[in-house]
Length: 307
Image (spheres, rainbow, N blue to C red):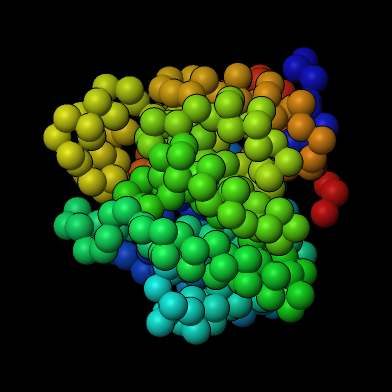
């Protein structure tokens, strides 16, 4: 039997069931997602897009408890570079933070809005931030992180993402170098780092103390080549199958797990395999195989009981 790494907890997310939006007729109903998540052997879950799962804390708590599930963190898209949208962003992040905290979780994953429409692939925002925008991003992230911690006891984790202005490794490092480690951490999404041409192992080694949360996923190198050669948007790349289950793709998940094990931190490692849209029967067997594979790497295959 593989020895489990004590500082890493394995979980999954609605994303691995093809869920990108609060409502969409191509997504499974939330009850089926929760049923299959538990059936696949996971205990921890990320909340996914706000409104997909119940937003009433008591209803959500009952739904999860009936299946033996617990929340690792919440997820929210939030604009950091436009001062005119701060109030909107703060209100939405606050809603997600409150729901997350109500379930006993301490992490809110913040994703900057994509500069491409997720369904059409059309560019609808600036692709690169200038110096003034970066200054705004740093100040806004620091303020949000501080206020969310003071009000809800959660820690903000910035999630680099394909087709957003924090995607490449230099952009990730610029963000980290300009933000407050006390209130802002990094959600290391291994697939999106690879998508942006970054080096996950290098980030773990040099920025390990800033990593507060992890999404583990792999990308198909051939489709990444198509992304570069054809200028594809992330939505089209996902339709072509850019996200693959382990051990296929890059980075090598076993290498990631081994490097994370060296960090002096308790970390949730959440499986994300972007599948939107997919047939209803696709996610469950993928989730089972993925859990078994990662368990063989020492990543929390056993169901844990600690909160």
